[in-house]
Image (cartoon, rainbow, N blue to C red; front, side):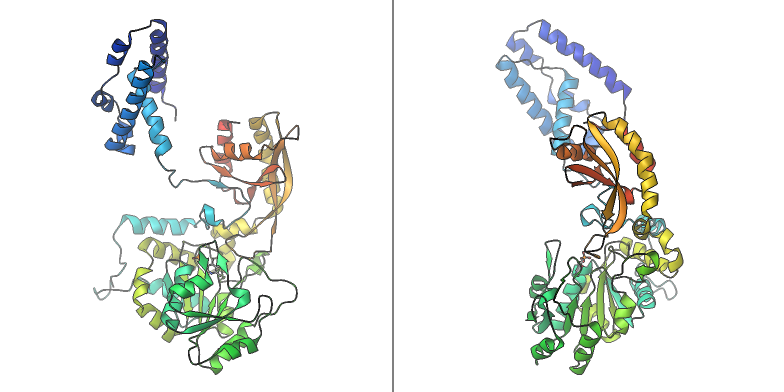
Length: 486
Ligand SMILES: *Cc1c(COP(=O)(O)O)cnc(C)c1O
């Protein structure tokens, strides 16, 4: 923001420096001119609230010490209060770790885990705000006046939308898998196909989660082919359950075989073992109706015989971070009774937001407009192309003659390990060097990240691509192009 009073002081400061340089002062006199920390602190108004008294005092000490050294060694150093405060502020700004801030996701990946996955619908944001600002009946039954159950409403919605007997919710899908394994398979064995020992985002790996849940992974079959008989041979008296993991972020292609949900379900039933599926992203409705490729649908998987399913709240579902668990009532009751459940529970804001997102699924016809994730995913390429053509000339002006700006076909992705091999036709603005030759993408990407609302694109073949699929505020994007510094 432009602050005219600062501008005036900074001009004064320029004069102060000039006069200091033109009239040489003896070192001791110059040192005496350095202001006191206390005096400097008095002039620090708003910054004290931002950084705290102690950090500011330390930064001022550093600046004073640096200026003192420079004066003693005969270098030029301003003793002006304003200049010292500004230098201290710069130190404070650099040291402050960057806080959570809004960015434009123009990577083309809709559910970008590093950029916060799902954007929430307005109705969920309102509910979250209200839950955050006020008291609520979180665990209070308004009818009886007694203690209530914080999850009852969300659990009921989950049952309604999946056809499950019972449901529960935890902090994320990783927590859901951990909790299920720890509840149903502690000190026992769990056979999993070698083709499904997934790692998600580097920190969630099925074998490691098994270990932390205190159960033993029994690897079954081979990487590319696992048969029903492999599972049958792995079952013994220590087997706790059968588990299937949706290979969300990769696809094994070629000479492959995975055991179907229905077959594994009947094998589990034969041995009276629970059958658990980690769906990863999962989906509550058939995305085919929006012209999109499909992830497994929760209700289908349960009707094919899965006893417990888990999936993420902030992947395709489009809600807040959470892990949803649905299935047989007796198993859910045991899961809820595990003391770890309390450690992994979700907060009131998540419950409030999740309930509103789930309610939108009661009316799938309107979902395409109401749910940002789906709105972005289903956006037609031609709509994105018109937007790109509208924006490209302004961008070209802001960048100047050294850069080439072109509207090109692109391929968006769902992201977060959903539908890993599928892409959605999209349109991007490609920025390159007008003269060719040197690689300017690092420099360009950095300049876009320095904008007031940082813009994150992706680099492809020596150009920076800005895929506009998820551009949710064109006016704000265009407005800030004037501050682009390249
Ligand atoms: C994404 C994913 C997880 C982890 O889910 P979070 O909600 O990110 O904790 C676990 N399993 C599978 C198969 C996944 O795709």
